[in-house]
Each structure stands twice: as C-alpha cells, then as structure tokens.
Length: 172
Image (cartoon, rainbow, N blue to C red; front, side, top):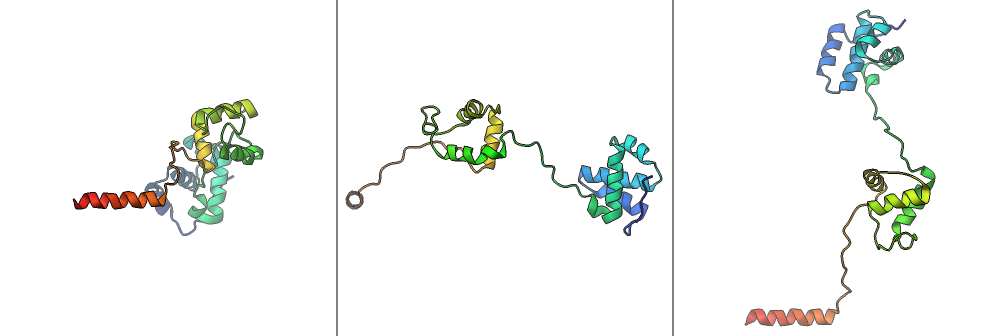
C-alpha cells in the first residue's frame, strides 16, 4: 500500500494550489499523483486516472516522502542514443578535419552533410538522415560555412602606393 508519510509542511489545500500554479506539465502530474494518494485513492486507481503505471505512482510517492515537492522535479530526459558509437567519434572528427579527398572520399575540398552521410554509410555501415548528420556535426563543434576564395597576402609597398595615389586623387 502506497501512502504519504510526511506532509513537508503542506496541507491538502496548499498542495492543490501548488499543483494549479505549476507551469511544468510533468511536475503538475507528479503533484496530482501525490495529492490523489493523499486523498485516499489506491495506487492502482491513481494509475488508471492519470494513465501511468502503478510503479510510477509508487516512485512519485516515495520521492515525495523523501524530499517533498523538490524531489518531484523532473530531470532532463537523456533522449535517444546516437547512432554513431562512441568508439569511432574521435576517428570521425579526425577525418572531418581533413578534406574528403584526404579521406579517400570524393573530389570536393570540403565536407557537406550529403557527403558525410554517404561516408558514414559506406565506411561504417551507419544509416543516418542528413538532419541527424547536421545535429551530430553541431554537437561535435563542426559548423557549416560556405567556402570562399582567400586572396594571397598583398604586397605592403603596393598597398601604400595605392593609398597615396588615392589620396592624391581625392585632393584634386
């Protein structure tokens, strides 16, 4: 039997008020579970009302009993694990810092998501969407930039001569 052992200074009325003021939907559900158990509903009935499992009801009530409302604050969900195994991340980052030609893949001087996607599939057998490739690249510090032509360093004497000639034209 699941039951509330300690109130942590809350009354049933103040718990209902906190539940209504809470902006986080996940936190509101947790407070509602505690309130319903406190009102005398059995854990199975609360689980059916809220649409969660009985084990979840028990864990929310146990968290409340240990630390009050602060213990019910939901953490960040870890999300789906990456399709790229951690063992090859460092190797991929090394490949990406070189040109695709150096990696023996394509004639381009720069990587793009389409090429990276094909590289992952051909080299490692990892199917991945282009959006997934973009997210993975961003998480690992790679950003998309348009390649541009970089001029060679100009001769400082010629630059100064040009500036002087320009000043003369402005005077006239």
